[in-house]
Image (cartoon, rainbow, N blue to C red; front, side, top):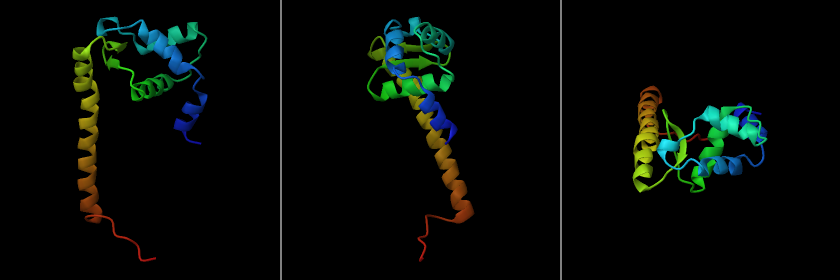
Length: 125
């Protein structure tokens, strides 16, 4: 079992609902809550989060379910108050990660081509 699988399996049931309850009280970037405070609030609600990655994974799932959860490195997490705030988060946080990943893929593709040539050759056996 991988470390990632252990984190997922040890994530408390109902964590996503509890996070939504916390974040629904934090509308707008000015009301953001940091990971440490989220963990403390979850503990008050009876959730023992053993790894902050559990919180990040739960927030990622909530976003994929369509919840407009914003974040910045300096402010923490919050529910986007309006379209302008969402667009700010999209451009400054989300798209920046996409561009970084694409840059990494391009460099690795180039390195793979230099090492092994272009494309994948099918095996005859």
